[in-house]
Length: 236
Image (cartoon, rainbow, N blue to C red; front, side):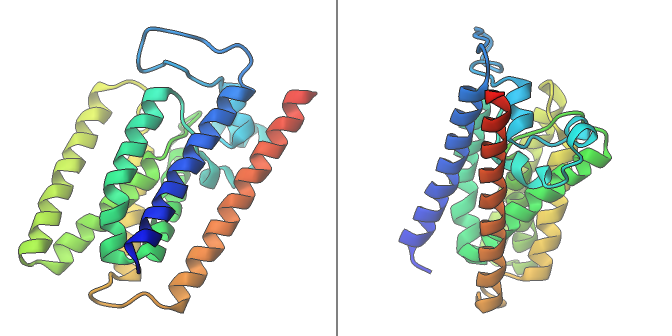
């Protein structure tokens, strides 16, 4: 797997998040400006629901379980998306290096869905953000470091532990953090890493390409559908 292809894919992931954030601002009727950095340039709740936010409220009204896939690409403020995209830029290349590009992307998508599924079961009313998928990458890297061992494995394991500690602290001190999503994404990533394996144990093959392609096409379809439905509702 070439570094150029990995770089291109990660940039595409970031751009999809940015585009969905821009669309959510566009769909928001009357943006609320504030000096609070946690809420600066925050899309409206209605726009986020139209675009595929997950949680018990969207499920109660629309019964759309596909939202567990779309919510991973939406964000609630400028600081929210900046923080998550910086984390994605850090975590995705390392995960792709150890698991291969296809498994990295599959883990990200499925872990995001797992995190939001658990969020719904945990009673979270409205939830969005890439952090569920990012926690999946962290879970996968923790498994890699623990399973591989050796100097490099220990380095990855120790680094991953520091990320987990940071997430726990953030979840305790900041308001409106979806710890259900973080925990569900992390657990899903760890389990998927065990099931899928990493490059040193099994080189990526056709099945990994097919799974990744299927999940990617499915996710893009759901996002396109969310934007289309959102446009339809906003124009009524």
